[in-house]
Image 1: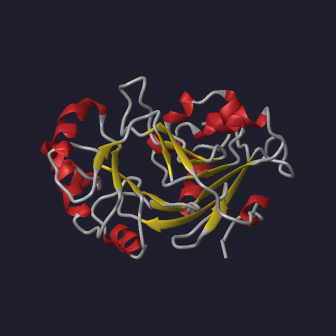
Image 2: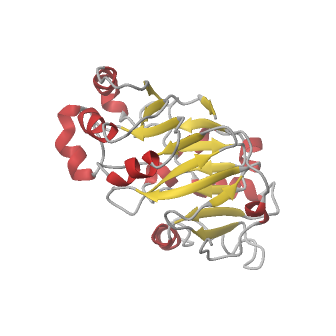
Length: 274
C-alpha cells in the first residue's frame, strides 16, 4: 500500500512493465555551465525524477507530457524547476501534476514554496476541487508503478530526509542515489537484487574538499570509492552531481579510480535505455 495524501492516479494500476529510457536533462551539482542543469531525469516521457534547473532545458511540449514528478529531497538543485513546471503544464493539461515525496519534503514545499508568497499555491488553482498540483506521500521500500516501470524508494544519508530510487523495467534495473554520504542502505538494496544494470551516484566535491563533503553529507572520489566497494556488482556506474567550479579536478580523480565494473561520467543530454 502507498500512503498518500490523495487518491492514487489511474496510472498506478497499469498492467505490465515496459522497457524504459531515462533522459538526462540535468545532472550537475551546481550552476555555472549553461549547458548543464541540476538534477532532472525524465523516465519514459511522463515521469520526472527531480525537478532541478534541468527543467529549463525542456520545451513546453515535453513539459505537457509529464504527469508525475518524484522528488528525492527539498534542496533547490532538486526542486527549483518544479514551480515553473507546474505553471507551464497547467495551460496544456486539465489533469493535475502528481508530485511524490516523503511527507517532510511535502511539508517544506507547502510552507516555503507553494505558499502564495514565493509562488502561488497550485494545490488550490484553478480550484481546490480541480487543482493543477497534487502531492502524494511515499515511503521507503513501498513500491509504486508509474509510466510502465516499478519504482522503489529507499533512504540515503544526507543533511535532510532524502530518497534514492530503484527503477525496474521489463528488461533491466537502474538506481539513482541522489545526494548522499556513505550509507549501507544503498549497497544493501542493490546487493539484494539479481542484477543492477545502471547506478547513478554522486561525487559532488573533489578530494581536497573531503572535509566539506563530510560536513554537508556528500561524496568526493575517495568516499565514492569507499561506497562502491560495498557493492557486489553493477554493469555500469554513472557519476553525477559534480560541482562546476571544480569539475575538471573531480573528473580526473574519478577517472583514476579502478573497479571491476565500468565507471563513467554522466552528461546532460544522454539517454540510458534499460
